[in-house]
Structure formats: C-alpha cells, structure tokens
Image: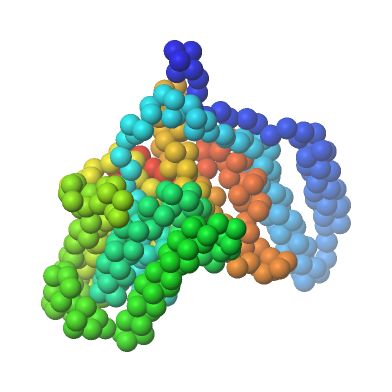
Length: 377
C-alpha cells in the first residue's frame, strides 16, 4: 500500500505515429512556398486593376499560410491524459474534498424548465431569467430526486440525467423486478415532466402550487426579468440531517439563485452569474472545487467528478492544474453531421494539442475548476 500511494493519479502521453502527419505538414509547407514563389515571379508591372487583384490574392494566401501555421503549432504534438480512479479510491477511500455544481440558465423559453431539471440533482442554479417557472421546476426536481437517486445507485444507471437515460434505455424485460421498478420510475418522471410543461404552457404558477412553498412570495415584488431583488432559496439543505432520500441516504444541497438586477447596471452575463454563485456557495458549502455546466448539458459518466479529483489531488502535479475541461458532445446530430456539430477535430485533436502548449482553452461549460482560480473573474 505504501508503494501504491506514490503512484500518480493521472498520466500524460504524447501521440504516437506522427511520421505521416510530419510528411503531410511538409508537403503543405512546400506547396505554400511554391504558391508564394509563383506570386512573386508573376508580379504585374502595368495595369492598376491587375495589381489590385494580385495584392488581393497575395495577402489572402499570406493569411492562409499564417492561419495554417497556427493550426500546425496546435496539432503538432497533442498530449492525452488518462486518470487512475482506482488509485484515487485506494488512497483516499471516500474522503474527498467538497464539490459545488454551478448550473446557469437565462431564459425559461429558450431553455425550458424541464431541460434544467435533467442536468443534475446536486446543483447551485443561477437563473438569470428570474423566472418562478424555473423555481417551480427545481421544486419538482427535488421531490423526484428522493426516488431517482436510490434508483440510480441500485441499478447503476448511466447517464444520470433522467431525460437522456429514458430516451435511450430499453425496458429490461428479462428481469421482472427491475422491469417493474423501471416502468414505475419512468412513469414518475413523465408525470413530473408533464406537470412542469403544463405550468410552463400556462405561463404562471397556479395558486394551489404557490401555497406549497413560501419561496413563491418573492415574485410578488418582482418588476421584470431585468429589474428585481435577489431571490435566494435553499430548496434542499444538505446540512440538515432530515434531508434524506427514500432509502435514508443524505441528499445534496440544492439552491436556487436569481441575482439582483437593475436596468441601470451592467450584470456581466455569465461571468456575473458565476461571481454571484461563488459568493452564495461560500456561505453554504464553500467547496474548494467547482463543476460549471450549462443547463442544457448533462454528464454521460457519473465518474467524471472522480476524473476531476484525480487531476486536482495528484500530489506531484495537482497544484499546477487550475481547471479541467471536458469535451462537449451533442445529441440529435444529422446522419452525415452536415453542420459539423460533433466537434471531432476540436475534441480529439485541437484540445489535446493546446494542452501540450500550456493548457487548453476554457469552453465555458463542463469545466472542473478550483475555486481560487476565480480570483480574477
């Protein structure tokens, strides 16, 4: 065990078999040199129109060469990182630092409330739209989580987003007990989803629902989405020993925040939302690590948090890492990916290439970060 404790929690490997890529790069470089040589050799000497056309073509080719050079620098030697979650468990057991999940949403129409509740159940939700419909969706999600979380643990459900899971999963007909619970859970989720969508279509919260939680009283003094006081509601307080799921396991903290907005002040969009979430979370959970996701995203792997911890808790190199960027993939792509929404080149080449050149860029969502890295936000 003493020997294992010295092993790294992640490793970094450079890409192999780069000889073919080197030949490809050399061929493009020679081609660019020939093009530039051709342009200089055929420099027009008389007509103004010809000179302008020549200059246009020449500077276009120079710009292409410059852009190509930048992409080659990024793609020249990509590095790939692999985590060892088994070593993490052996070394620390289940004693891990706290993690706050920040989810940002801005518009209950563009980003429907049902999309918000399918992201994660352990969240600090920043609602820049200041919508009571989003708050209602969060209340329904908190009730559903009491039976969804035990279901996930018992049957090892992946992904943990109920919308994504039930869209792809097939009813397990070979196991009667699992099939019964599976159908019951799916019906519960569909009922919750239908209730939220019905209220969203209505456009307001009915009086009988408003009486269920005192938090709805906050919207009695809201002027508009751009002019309202701070609305902060702790829907589930993880510090409360009575905050338990249906199997008696503790529930994570669930917080709703609509930060104060006034029309005469700049609210700085998502950066401002992140600052507000940090201030709120510092008084509630104050976790040293933050997972930042958008409301229309979900993790397809419940162990992604452990991947983040492998980087931050590595004794030798962990202190050198400020954030961990996960690749972003999209569902419902066209058959031939006509709009290049799969981001294959970005996810499989360029992010890894930037990682070898000092670190990848932050894409704005699904980032594991140290809280101290937000000091200059």
